[in-house]
Image (cartoon, rainbow, N blue to C red; front, side):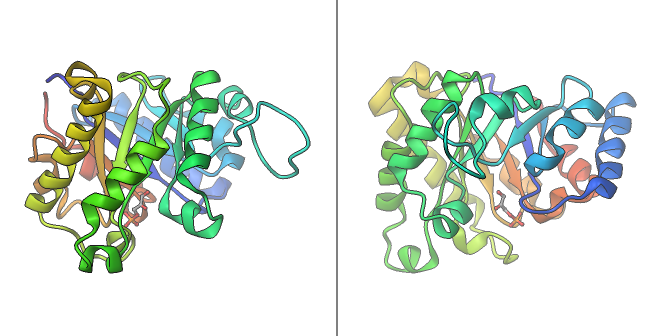
Length: 252
Ligand code: 13P
């Protein structure tokens, strides 16, 4: 298997320069060797990308939270993958449910952004997730299959691709699916990738779980074979909680 766990903090629209103290605390923990066996990643708002990149050691990854699909041009307020790469991002989160709802991002849009990310040497973290209504209607796998097929571009390479399963009803709510539910979904997603790209490809892609991950529940998700890390919102804002989750990651 050999997929190293990825412990990713999504700061969303949180973080002023004062919060760089949390980044310094992460850097200090890494310097002391207290970060656990996984790969750490922080995704601050774009305004802090270069400051965060400068303060963290190279082994901690930095991600942007979205990108435009064009390299440059007349798109007021947008940032291209190339710009974000230059500002220090190595990954970019794409198709987060908050962007799919706040900005009506479609699967086609997410796929175009993922192509842009690959073009700019940014690794896409592509998010999928069902709503509570879709879950109640037992449409979870249908919805996730459609999002995965539509959002992942043909150009994806297994080492550079990360998928994040984030059930919308679990984001910021304190509610979480059971480890069995997550195992079923992650197995489904990997199988779906295998049908399209082959088993060798699918077995190398990291699939993260996200939605109310905390130090108190992370271990049960990390115990699932097909869970290759976590995408953490609220609990990533405090270095102490983020590092506590990271230390629960398993060696693989
Ligand atoms: P919470 O961890 O705050 O539920 O957020 C999850 C998320 O949306 C990460 O991208």
